[in-house]
Length: 604
Image 1 (cartoon, rainbow, N blue to C red):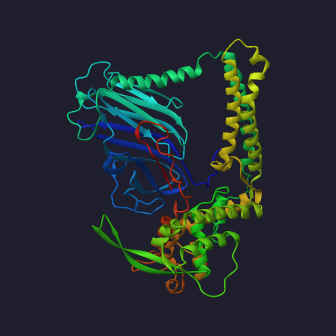
Image 2 (image 1 turned 45 degrees about the horizontal axis):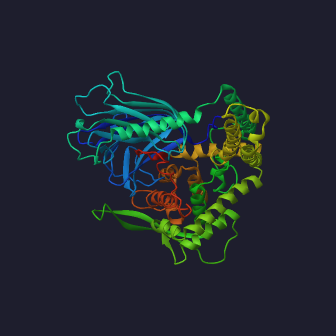
């Protein structure tokens, strides 16, 4: 089902990777990644893992031949000027974050860098074993091409080898018409799946090993045997199986697919008769945390938590005051003045709070147990009690989802069906493993593979059913839908989002009370357009807003000085802060692959 027109999502139509092997064994990598944006986006990132002995430098980002400027923030979810990028050394990986402005369009970004230490130079050959697509990407990739350009050398036919992994991905490798131009093309790469290319060529093509790792002894036969063993294992897995047995397995596999298609009806959105471009005020009294969850069919993330936090400041439950602090970066070589926000607990009678708001306050009381704290310290203090805060954050998410269903805005009937599908899948897989040998056509078959295929069929049908049920956690739109009332409410809130995003560009802005200005800003945080409202305040808000507001502050540059840094700072502080102890939050490394590189990326 295609996402609704208002859903903010992105896809990856294509990626092209070019790897130039330098004469010293270092690699010049150029990645061209096409993003297709549905909605407004302003940032993207790439995480590139590094193993011991590997390093990355000479990093650059460009688009359509225009170079991006370095020095921008490199935190996930951060804000920066369009056309800038930042780099962060995270120890076991390098993170590159770039900033832009894109709405409902396709953009192709180019990332270049030099990687040293990945090429292994043995006595006889050099081995370039590189993951050209990592397993930490959370969206599918339609098409991937990768090319490796070797150093100029006098090579003979058959001296260059190329391999592609894994076999579960549809693709092919080639050495080109000349036999010395290794390349790979893969299609339909699912989220969480790595792809790697391995190129082996004579060591004499390198003039030095300054950019490589030196391996001992001759390795050509070892590498060939490794790749041959993998191929033989794959052949053995499919040997001795007749077409009729494969037909049996395929028919079994079709069962969960049919169930999956039948259950998809749970995610079909009700149609609403609504065609207004703008709503000029919040269309209902829906709490800020519930708005983004409603628009994303029940997904809850740090954006809803952030909006609730600022709503509690607006209502006087928390206090906030700006201050300017000095930030030291680049190992003390760079100092800059930044705006920070000190948050504290308000004194006096406690105000009644909703369930999800009490969860936010529980975290805030832990963070502020020693008194008011600046936003720059929030992440450290949250992670100091990571287990408790992660559990509370999970409760916050559950209470938001519960509130939406309780108000009959969200229909989660499909989740119950998914649980039945999960149980049926486990029963089919486990029960079928033991029952398969007793099937009459299996026990009477002269084919020794019959029992294996029967068991394979039951495991496959059970596994696919379990997989279909598990998709509920990552693709809620297949199982969770808005009710008719929820669909209408979502359409109106999306119209209000458009109004906030375009507010600063309207020629004639209506008169807005000071109270409504603050309410606009809180909902703008929830809807991801806070910077647009800050700009509108700078242009249209009365001067008294600065004197009376608990959310807007003036810092010598118009509204948006301290406020802008505050909103960006809290999102940076909270992104990933609620991960459970031991969770990396970014994927599982190399997933058994042998190549370096990989990692993942994304956009916001």
